Length: 115
Length: 111
Image (cartoon, rainbow over all chains, first blue to last red; front, side, top):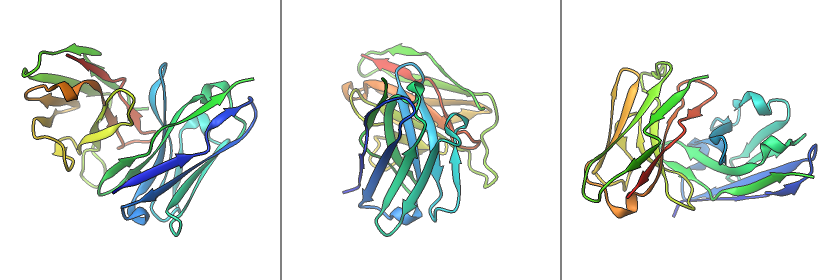
């Protein structure tokens, strides 16, 4: 069974940091582009960042550049989104998603940035 | 950024009847590798998005054949031949030909 299990969400104050993690199983993780996508009622779905299968290429949406970083560990089948200098507008449900021969999504995790 | 405009935003349908959802792109979506990078997703209430169609017209494994995708220039269409109750949800098109990858605003399918 294919699974992507995300963790690390929660409530954080503006300017704070959070680290989201996602572990995959049941598919060939090291052949998939891994992505973070977020969703809010106001803006809908927004692609935040992605990383290529070997981790050598990373891309970020402009609104998070310089604040978010992404990495992967193909031994542990995991991907991480490090979120720094968080703002209220980063409040969203965050999904990790794998794009490759198939397409797999984890359960959403809630990130709330508020004082 | 590429803007994907979906219509209608809300689509009331009758069980057993067909439905047609539109997604118009502000730019061409052909990737240098020759694929057209436009997919369709379904999001049922309370669930994560699920991909139905990739590269315009290819159904994912396990997707019923009542779902089909097509294109005409920069206009893309998802058709459901006969709507079933389990099809209720929001349908999104997404492009990944250009960065940032972008989603349409969604079409809410209601029975």
